[in-house]
Length: 311
Ligand code: AGV
Ligand code: CA
Image (cartoon, rainbow, N blue to C red; front, side, top):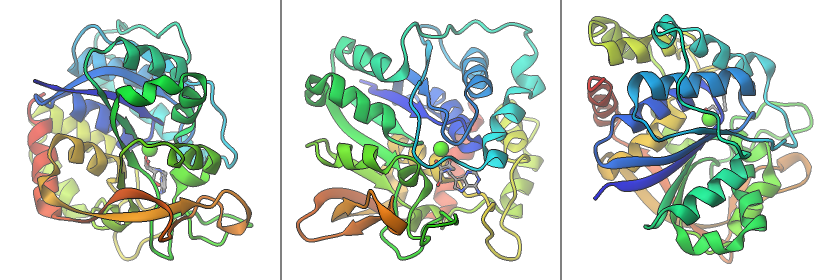
């Protein structure tokens, strides 16, 4: 039996590569996809998602657009990435877009999909949690039908990846965009698996990885991921604010195959205000989350590249 997955993402390069990989996993059935305009602009991210499903996926899916807004906006340069993916020739060869736009906003689409699915749904979120928080406010009964939430978000180290005025640098961006939403989800009894910066820091985009994808580009799926990761800066000499990691792809791969990561349970809270807003902190009486803190880098890159080859 295939795992039922609902995927909410925010249109970054690694979000869109994640969508592609999910469509290639034989252990997974996507029941719904929605897009939140956090680390992207909505229109190109919607088009890119629908075209990826057309080109690499299966029928029966639609894509819902979120009308959620965050507290702390992502930098414009990063949000532009969805335009580049949407423009890739491989996604535009057919000259048409078949996968429809859902008739409801993302949070309501999530509710409908979870309630309409017979089995419990695993939620995969690779952007902020706003749509989930709103869905829980609107229809708390969905909680009983959620198997678990797998989220790319947070860090329990001192050093986050937010480098913005008025912030102390301790937060991860998906929490920072809407800290209240994360705090809302923390209040629930939903099991949470967190892919935090602890482990994504171990999977930077590096030149050797790019070279590997270039060598194997005669395969159409490997060429697609190579083209996508040509749009973002790799780690060369040292990590900068724009250095790209495989954040969301590691999270997605973890759903397909948890064998190459290590997980530990941490009790934590989410800071919602002040200079540390968006920080996740370990606290004895906080709520438990399962944190991926270590990854076998080579096994991960092999796994995702092999999945891509199924295209
Ligand atoms: O914090 C990581 C999250 C992931 O969901 N995103 C990118 C991934 O999709 C925000 C982000 C942090 N640093 C970035 C980001 C960067 N240098 N470029 C683009 N997005
Ligand atoms: Ca993302």
